[in-house]
Length: 356
Image (cartoon, rainbow, N blue to C red; front, side, top):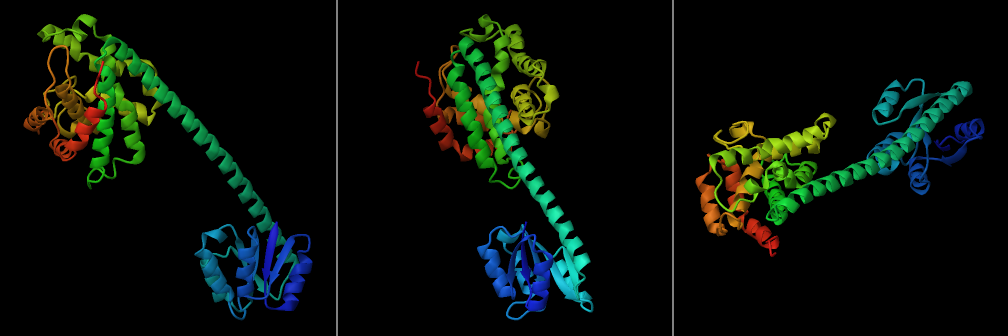
């Protein structure tokens, strides 16, 4: 344990040094020398600081180290005279943790120093343990994120095997989701919601929106024409199939935030702002934000993509349809934001155009 004794009284400084000679000691005759020692000796643990000194007094030292993060780990005890109660209070307010009164009581002094060195040792041990724990948590978080991403890609792979049209659809909608979130976070009403962590979750889980289609029979999923009313009712079940798949995998009970986000995307991306959607007929802001975002993005990408049952619409045709559904199918605020970044949306579409 390294101690710094700061006192302009040679007698008191020598007395303290003799009493604490079993510690690693440094001494300074005033505040200026104290600051030089603190700057030079990077690992001072405890400073015993006199208040009344020439050039730079103890209060000035306390103010200097309080405003400098380099000295946040220094524990300071002040030396005061018996009639300087106001000085003791001021010193404690400036960050000192204890005071020692002059004339010095050597037994009391020794006990106080032993107490604070013990507290300092405990503090260091806790900091080291926290560092180890933080590293362990970070490693575990990376592992969980990797597991999450691998699981998502595996699930998407199952869908792409069955429906080749979805291979780039999932990527386009994923990046459109990110573009929308990055744009919306600039707006006052969305900034506090769309944190970096939440946007990362939305980006990672967006590809799962159609995962329930793995439960739809091929003759309906890949039908090269308009679905009958009965077939459409079966197709609509892909939202609940996807939600059930996540729940049956045991994810619901884990309460992981990214699973909750995935459930909102999977279960709500066919809800409509006016309440005419499915599966629950939610309306307005009852529909979670992930569902409202994916509803808009999913429809746009379906419109500009060629499907077995239709040709691709132009970007302008798709935007006209999106605009006509403002406040009906789609959240009007999100439609406005989508129009504001339509050039970026077009670039994403071109980047992930199906070529095979």
